[in-house]
Length: 44
Length: 281
Image (cartoon, rainbow over all chains, first blue to last red; front, side, top):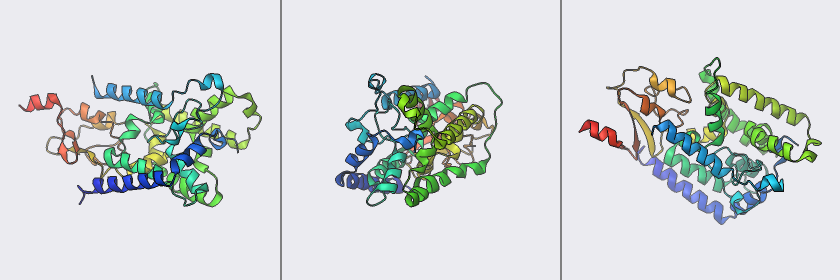
């Protein structure tokens, strides 16, 4: 079972990635990351 | 070429690749192109003027705090693929903040060891600062306190854009103190942030025992000389647990082992380097 685990995780991760892309998460990430994050700078 | 030299080349290349928006020095703005939609499997602040890609921890927090369904499937997918393939290897070979810690530890000073219980801090950081508190407060609390953001984002942006300095307050002072604390700790302790506070390291550590790439130790050959522990960037005894959660798969231990007791396996198959094959023949 332990030998199969990485492949199971890999398939689940690929499915999650595909779902995320299908749901438009790349655009959401881009929309957020392209704006200067004031929290990261320590403002706010 | 030695393993550590390959690793340095890889770390420099990855740091340069993920932070190469040099136009920001002229434009004084961060990169806003399509690459910013992609997460790298490393802690690399997207507020850094040079950053080309998004930070996975910042993205996870954004979805926890503001997303319609609280989970970034896309980011978890990227981290899951990386973890399932190579475990924590991204920490040792890709992460620019890990690279900085490796470099600062080379400064001559009194060296200290990190108490083992502090390595649970990264799980608290993941559970509380990245998930629980942002879920309740709708604020990205890890980003607010992150020393990588302070160093890669705040410092250059504040130098480039004077108008931002007028907005600084108590939160910035706290963040600056955290940056100073970790920078000082990095000189005296091996990778203190990775081991005690990094939520990304915590996520990848779950995969170390089940990843396709794994370390193994031939206990019949091992003399427990502790040379592996001496070179280990996270101070672990590889022979006690080759798949330890703190192992960042740097493979430096494999090279220093005088008995060739440490090897790595891909999908359960041992990988032999050309010199080992020659020795065995």
